[in-house]
Image (cartoon, rainbow, N blue to C red; front, side):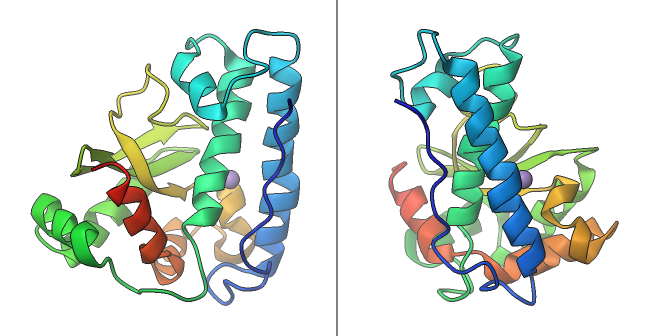
Amino acid sequence: MSFKLPELPYAYDALEPYIDEATMRVHHLGHHQGYTNGLNAAIEGTCYENKTIEEILKSIHVTQTAIRNNGGGYWNHILYFDIMTPGGSKEPQGKLADAINQAFGSFEKFKELWAKAGGARFGSGWVWLLSKHGKLEICSTPNQDNPLMKFTECVGMPVLGMDVWEHAYYLKHQNKRGNYIQDFFEVINWDKVGENFEKTL
Ligand code: MN3
């Protein structure tokens, strides 16, 4: 069994003008394909060959660098591309909206804390909205680590993830990560994030 690059659920130019087509193409066909290939090469001939990606990420040791980086990159980008859309709800709805209000006070306050976490991540990494059986928290990890890996500081199931590697925004936003984060808010698929959240309840 080998892992395959999932197709994008929308066209490469669908998130314009917020996330540009050139960035989406190189991010999906270049970076995500690269992590997929790297993961397949790293697990070949090991006990991980017939495991799911979640099983792999939950069981690896901190020193298994190739699987950690490529397996993390494979899983993280599936979530990232899946929680963006050109349409859908512009704000959280239903149980997710209630949980955000409970955890952060309001959606506006959540956006402020999320943008702050994205700006504070030095170098490359990710920002996560985690559900601990329905209780939400914001957490950030370096490189391609994610909260499924037991050695990170984040505990919980990611329902939303934001890539803050420069490759996610540099062609359009250059050094202005904060502008990318504001544009990311315009394309979040809150219906999908809500579905992800309800699975954790
Ligand atoms: Mn990326």
